[in-house]
Image (tube, rainbow, N blue to C red; front, side, top):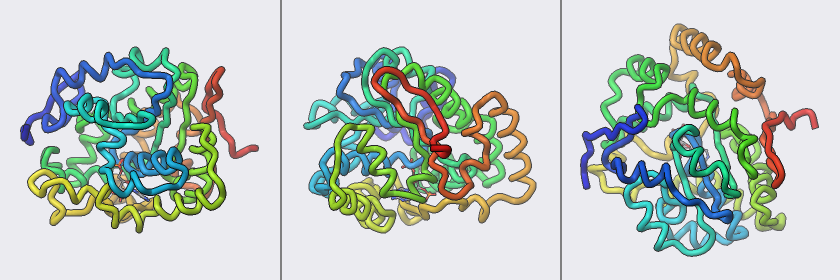
Length: 313
Ligand code: A3P
């Protein structure tokens, strides 16, 4: 199935037709989760692949065998993609499921399950830059045009996978609806990878020794993942992802937006951000993504879950 130029529209959101069909999207929206499932939820370019790697290392207690021998899309398949079912059946061990679906589409299926949900968010300015570069190499995404054109589509929420604002607000505003919900940011993972691994291991109730955490930290570093063909997407044929036009593991930095945005673009972005996020919590002031280590992380308990600012603790 090529369908590289096809967009599949579902709930008014465009998805790449190369990996999605109406059937696969409907299947995802009605999926029967198991209580033992771990579900990674992200808006694209927020650190999805990184979290897949962190979780596989945690669940395997620092043993990199699976991480170095199976592509990430096999060991943590995307729920909404048409080959999901087949991949899930072939997978062994605890199920790790990845999704970019927004809350309003997935909530009915997921809300009442005891599956563990890990939500990763990233500074949307860096997301926009990363996503723009990804459009240039991923032939299943449309030509992004100039950065300025792409940015206005991003702010309007008309890019593939929909609006960043709706995604983040939808999932985090409803964190309390889930029995087990972990909110973590890309920025925290960058600033404290060891601590992030510990946090994920506590959440998954899978304790790692210091040695296992250190091995995992090294394995999940940008430099290691950049070299690992199981996660750097170089196994994907060139006609689908053209690595001569850019790398999937591109820069892996906080604040790269400053190299791309003009002052005017940044001001427009800030204004849209303030309007869109006006009713959301302190956690989502844009500066929050840009500050030095500030582990403002969601914690969940089996009984209830809530978003709270842990920086005061
Ligand atoms: P950049 O394009 O800014 O480099 P996703 O997996 O959600 O598509 O996100 C991809 C982004 O995460 C890319 O960002 C990629 O470089 C970054 N990334 C992946 N693994 C990383 C790691 N170990 N450390 C830092 N950034 C990482």
